[in-house]
Length: 166
Image (cartoon, rainbow, N blue to C red; front, side):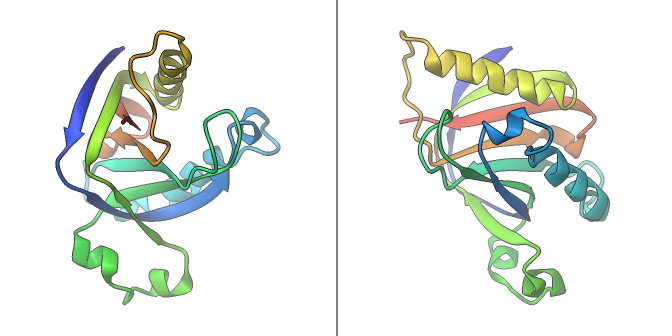
């Protein structure tokens, strides 16, 4: 695992499908929603994207921190800001797609490569371990965090986990 600080110079406009969950809910298969979110995304949207298109898992609307409280997760792809604003698609009118911006700012990035979903779970585990260590140098903002699936491969590939920091 590698981690580095990156400054995102400008916001990234995205569209996708969303669920609200908690980390506690994700522990049990009966209450977990993220696996179903990604399955639905893969079945209904990934095939419509250009080959190699980057995919984003965006975590926002945090109620509190990573131990308590709900948050929204959006399985998404990048769009230009005009697309993000427009409501002329049938999907947007039906309310199945949401628009969300990844804000410009400072992020601590954890990179992993391998078979999904274990690779992304390993990245989150390393991030939680890092931020929960008593000598942690950075403070999470709990504004927006995101997974960046480079090349759009949700089975095997590279993921960069961006954690928003002050």
